[in-house]
Amino acid sequence: MLADIVDALRCPLCAEPLALVDRSLACPARHSFDVARQGYANLLPGGARPGTADTSEMVRARSAFLGAGHFAPLAAALGSLLRGTGRILDAGAGTGYYLAAVLNADSVGIALDLSKHAARRAARAHPRIGAVVADLWQDLPLRSASVDAVLNVFAPRNAAEYRRVLRPDGALFTVTPSSRHLGPLIAELGLLTVDDRKNERTDDALAGHFALASRDTLDLTADLGHAEIATLVGMGPSAHHVPADDLAERIAKLPDPFPVPLSFVLSVYR
Image 1: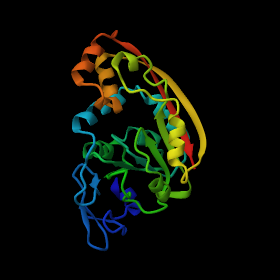
Image 2: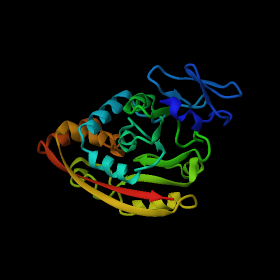
Image 3: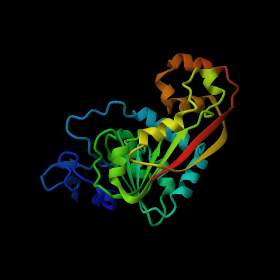
Image 4: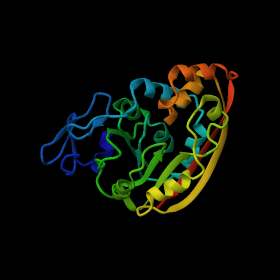
């Protein structure tokens, strides 16, 4: 709920602290932001555009895929890494699936996403999640040193802002695909590949703000039906790379179900 996280929020227009007043968030400079009836707040500055935010159809498909449990081992691994963490920011939270999985009785979560459709679901994903619509590439609507951990799963990494909002002893937890992710699907469907230097490039992008503390790889295999494969592809960067008709034709040629390798790199930065 927003009441659990409001003390971490700041106005996106003037950076003053926000307070929850009736059904809105307001700052001392009298900037006000309505809280939607679904429980999330939109803190995009005036005139900002949602751009590449996930549509309602994309969010619905992603929710169904994650709800089927295909990525449950990844969520469990993140839960082990973040056990005992107080306030967690999920930057690029989507439906709130991973954030809900890592929260325990003593923690609260802040779900930031550019999509209002994702924020609606994140606000309902767990009773101690406060969901906010915000652009990860801009200044985050959070006070400095206000969170204990930043979770970043397949989402943009704004190193300077993540460091600003983290407490000095906090950590950034990222999940990226390894070069083994999706295996034969890449050639069969003409998908984008993950190069072998992705970890190195991620480290370089965070350098100056974060240093790598640990890194592990999680390898799984999921037997997916054709519809699930289409959803999985639609959740990644290849969604805009392969024409929909071409993708459907290629998927139809695969065995049903088809064993799909899932390979994730879990990194911790401090």
